[in-house]
Image (cartoon, rainbow, N blue to C red):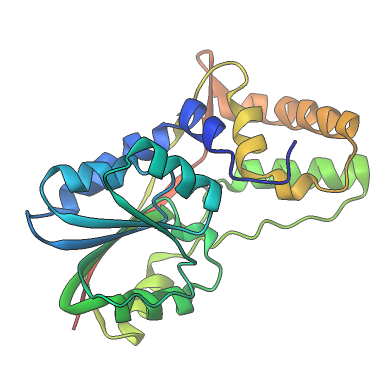
Length: 251
Ligand code: BEZ
């Protein structure tokens, strides 16, 4: 398992559901021709491309140079930049900031909200969806328990999965009007018999640092066994996703 959690090839081949589900959110963004839109955490650029397709001027931004390199290769006509969602300042202002399945990686959530606020024109909108409270709780618990009991490794995930009240309050503190906030469960089908291990390899590699290759293989097998009764049904693996979706307007 590589400790580089951003493997663009694995992301595009096996985790395309991330941007497939994101298409729903595009309807809420309702981008118009000529609008300036910032796509925060654009990954390999598929949704950035959909936003551009309606005639909006879009900039895709991601903290991962590997993801941005792939996004540029996928869509050379579009603008992509490497920047951290919790520490950026761009010379231009935007009519909307869009973010799909990215902000749960940004543990400095307040700093990110500040940056997004300053990136928007007054009246600009913020449309985002990411992991909500309880997201992947079952998977995270299985990883933690197996690493603890089999390898005496204490590990905690470093994701940000807020409840509606917490995130809406944060947005209101920073001068946003929260127009919609919705938490919902979205069990997400993973691709193939190796779906769960591929998901863990893609997104949880950091938790396995310090284990030798054979130990990682054992850990993955034990985690799969542990999750099979709760996360495998009708021949498919499912991740226990919950989502937080927000629509807010900068005052
Ligand atoms: C998510 O989309 O909810 C997610 C993806 C990777 C790691 C954690 C959460």
